[in-house]
Length: 160
Image (cartoon, rainbow, N blue to C red; front, side, top):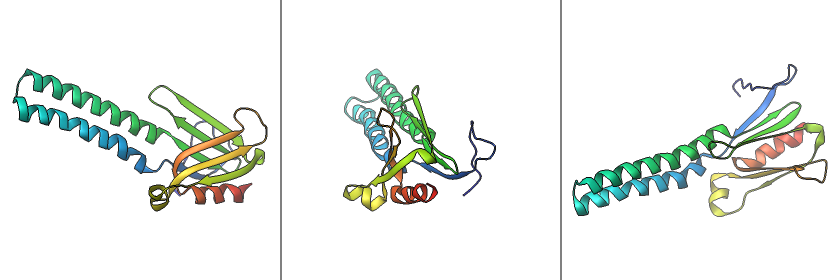
């Protein structure tokens, strides 16, 4: 794995795994964006190049760009980092909400993976569930739609 560093990394801490979401999660927002761009073409075919077309095209391109930009930003900014000391999950939700959850490896009690459905099984992506000590809120870290969840589960299990 290439060298990976992050803010807050301890001096004696090394990154063992950095896992991103599976790229397939960009498919639905991409499809929505493409379908939204079909609207101005339909307006052009039925009404011609009028001010209605210009306005429709501008709004459709703006909305399509916003939909895909949000999804791509969430995809690129979310990462699960497994170090030799702890697990850190950076979860980007929209443009203005980020959750950072971390736990030391010695606090992890159970690691499970969930890959259900034909598409998720075929493309090898699913959810990773990390249960930590404590019964309160935050005692479970759920990482959605990551690539190769079983392999990540085994990598974490080996370290604990």
